[in-house]
Image (cartoon, rainbow, N blue to C red):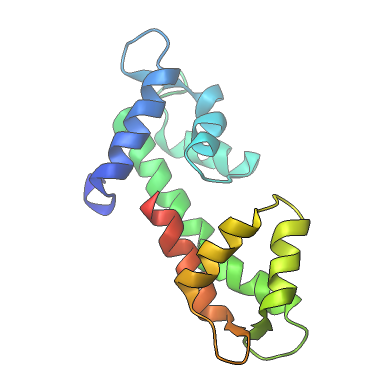
Length: 152
């Protein structure tokens, strides 16, 4: 499974895994899986976690590091963040067919949900590139956001 993940991801997963391997036996408890996955940036539902545990835990309900790598890879494939971001932008764009006014996006990103700072929005916009008319191409923005998140 490691061939599908970057070395940086594997190192990050190992560090988090080690924090929850309280008895230092190379295993984490199944009850900790949802917390570990969320610490690593995934957003699994309780049903998804139960399914992962059915497929990857041992008889005691524990997971080893190799199983965690498999679970995280599968979860990343399911979540498809770029598609989710694009769908959210399309719902917000007001019928502009793939483009959005930068001011509208800035207002949403700094005023709703997990609010970003203006500086963070500026960095995302710079990465995505703007049209000369002040419009943002939604697909380019979704690609830039997911690319930026992958670097972290």
